Figure 1 (cartoon, rainbow, N blue to C red):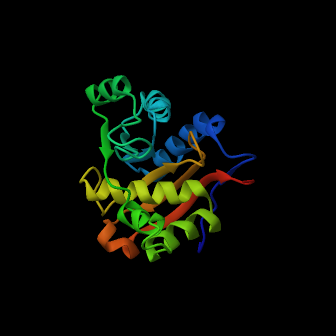
Figure 2 (tube, helix red, strand yellow):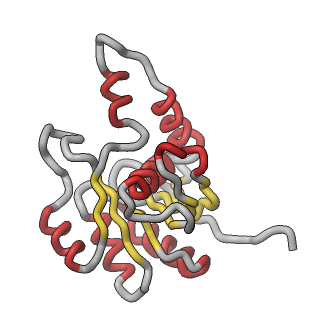
Amino acid sequence: MTFTQKKIYYFEKPGESNTPDAARFAIERAKELRIRTIVVASTSGKTAQVFFDAMSKSEIKLVVVTHVIGFTKPGEWEFSAEIADRLQKQGVRIVTGTHALSGLERALSRSPKVGGGSRTEAIAEALRRVVAVGLKVAVECVLMAADQGAIGIHEEVIAVGGTASGADTVCVIRPAHTGSFFDLQVREIVAMPRVR
């Protein structure tokens, strides 16, 4: 056989209401492929909690990637300290670091003194527009998790992102560090919003 047939789920609309199904699809594909880690983006902690609850009966490891401190307000972390404490006590790794596909580049492009786009932001925009906003988020979270040592780069992971809040994009990724971005491979799309 020269091909494999697999399910891809398409959500009718993007957004938070898809989170429970995204968790189910992520776990389903992880079990099917014997993938040991799910990397999920979570801003406030709600999405992380949904995934943790859904994964409670599995041996799959959860890695949560949050917005950088100061993303919305200088010096503030948007993630719930209560949820973080509860998840960390259960062995969940929480990664908070500079966003791999923006970070310093965004400061330069937003500056009235410098202005203009960057190659990094062009890559991020291509991921958003060609497939789904959540794919850009998922890829970025995998880069950040690999850079922080929360995941290795030799085993596939399930990566989960979302459009605005919650989770609506699930994919299989072979990780890479940010400095080796072009070694990263999106190997499967498991679920994504059909309409934006």
